[in-house]
Amino acid sequence: MSETIDLLLKRRSVSPVALIGPGPSPQEVETLLKIASRVPDHGKLAPWRFILFEGAAREKASHIIVARYKQKNPEAPADVVEAERLRFLRAPLIIGVVSTAAPHAKIPEWEQILSAGAVCMNVLIGAQAMGYAGSWLSNWLSYDAQVLEAFGLKPHEKIAGFIHLGRASAMPEDRPRPDLASIVTRFA
Image (cartoon, one colour):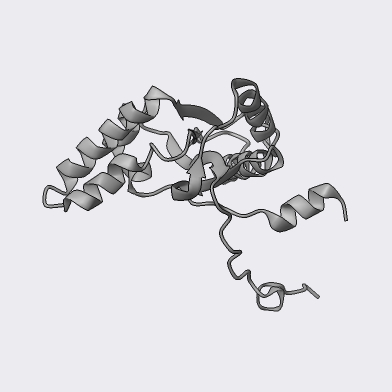
């Protein structure tokens, strides 16, 4: 088997709790974003964009998340609020993938949305090929208009995912994968 096939067969998400630094260098981030951008994109619309959360910007994002969480959940226990505070502080780099899908005369919006999902997957595969680990997450904040506005999203934009990247402090065991016999049919 080729190295690429082996990489894909071993690809595994690693929880942000298990991610440590250092994260990708600026040159590696640029390479990751180039890899991410090489996805099927009917009409060459590039119906996605990136927001990088790194360094002190993670702390700023953390304050936005906690303030909004406490506003929505004033009775939340301190340990839950602390978990929200740490949400963007664990991984050294978080790439927000923003879907900019919009109605188009020729390109279905659904295809644009799928393209943004492919971007997320390319980031994870590229990061693993570089020796990093990561997780593609959404969570409540991906659907909260106030958080998204504070992160710079326009009203029609949506978060396709927050990709948390770093080095794995420990690799988790692989999870059970679907039995192909239960998910594959052959059209006849």
